[in-house]
Length: 111
Length: 112
Picture 1: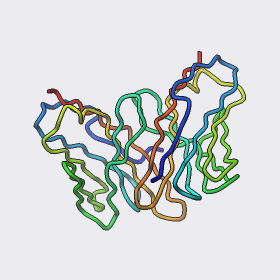
Picture 2: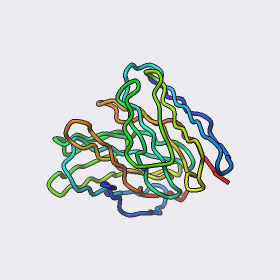
Picture 3: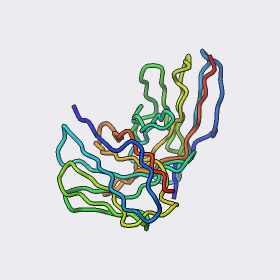
Picture 4: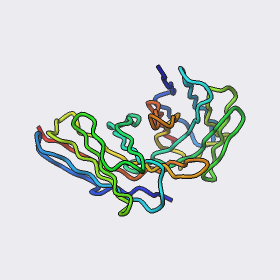
């Protein structure tokens, strides 16, 4: 069965520090992968999606970047975090039959 | 821009009652999906309804889709306290890359 792993679950980082969030998928090959951010009490905002290794599309200009070094690995990064980067970050993969499968999320607080 | 808009934003009902949430969208879709999110957790996929379907059932869930009105509803029958969560609709656009857009969600509270 397909599973998706996302870590860490919570993270507190100072302003100006770097960020690396990792997401891996098991049980499927060549998945479409996504990074979403959810502000408190809000819907989900698509940040990046990837249809294959090295292929990244950015939906919204951000202080963030994404990379896909391997087929089932998707990384969200920042060189210098801003206070506005705080939020709940979700990784997901999609299939045409089952919709999206989300990771458990990372709660990022920038202080 | 957000396409799916849920209504109401918040809903509080007694256990055993039915809960109905609505979702409206603006452009043509390939399919529409409903998700559930417990506080501080990831989203869980509940049900997917394709643009050529009008109604779908899964356990206590019933989803309808009216493409002429660009709207969908999620009905949870005989609600339980464990149904307390936020519910999101997500529309999947038609065309090459099927972009998914999530609404802002309906917060459901089921009072035991």
